Length: 469
Picture 1: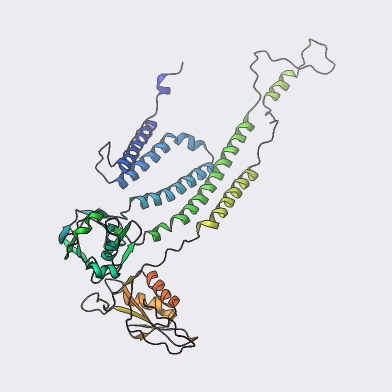
Picture 2 (picture 1 turned 60 degrees about the vertical axis):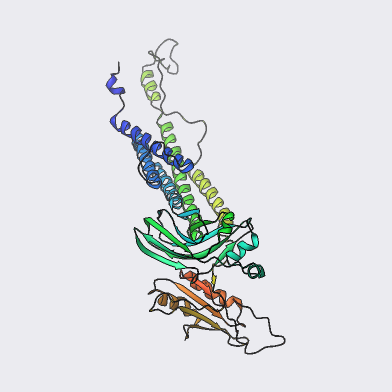
């Protein structure tokens, strides 16, 4: 009889079961917290860290439990399993990183009454730029909310509704790290249901103890009926989200190669097992073979040898298995076909426009500090059929050198802000080209209106209407 010690579970598997149970418990706790904001296990750590530790424990536990099985597999099968794990880790890690970033670190109700407002502490775990804005529902007064958020009209002048004015400071552990106001930063956004007024933007290192202080110098308590909210949001989320498609395609390709290797290894392993099978007869008295011409009932002297030799011969498979090359080639071809179909639509960009700000008529570009002049890019008309001229702070710059010149000028500044001006007769496409170049360097762009536009150098027929931007 087999002893009980041989049937006992080895310590390695006990450790694997323990790690797997712990990892699944942490994953369940994280999922419950993200969906209900309640932690059943009350684990004292951030959800992102708990998620990472839970995944690590689960993977290590599965590897410990399946270690003997993995050792018996072919090298090709192990490589396939490793590639599948790598593909899942790459794409899963990216999704985990995107899901755990503070894209909107602050979103809370705020009163627009005159006075001071202080937010609770919040954390930022993303080194990127953020916008501060106040969003108001239009149901309280559609025209009034439009005036409040910067969309001027005759209604604003008639009813005395002014744009929302505010100043703010951002502090980390009591130390001011950024400040701004609506006097130096204007911008609006809106739709049918809500409209928002930008208060400013900032870019600071990650931290856990940020506090925002806002001062409203004017009383707009009437618009509290529109449930105003003070929000801090990441300004270029789409630039991070663009990396999802290339990573998904890379993970799909690596996973497909791993799956092909895994399937081919399993098929080859089965073929080897079939090839090693031999004829086994359990009869205690083998039936002797008769030699040709021998009398019935007379055993052949070589019958025993022939039978023992026949026992060691492998069985021939009645049906030939699937060729490994054809199997792998079919899988790889199917995966590549799927990838090509996905590529036809995956990289089709939907135009989202360019974020710009507009100075008020008569306002002058603000200095980033007392010792630095604002960076002003001027697009000037050079006449019909000629490429417009370009200058940075009155210095002539070639179009091909604009990107490098802007980066060189902005590299020594605390705030990367570019002001763009243009003559009346300059094509709007040239101005957009300057905006795009400034955005590619990571700068914030302000359009400077020209109340007294300069006349074009040459006209043919009727002068085109002046465009203010």
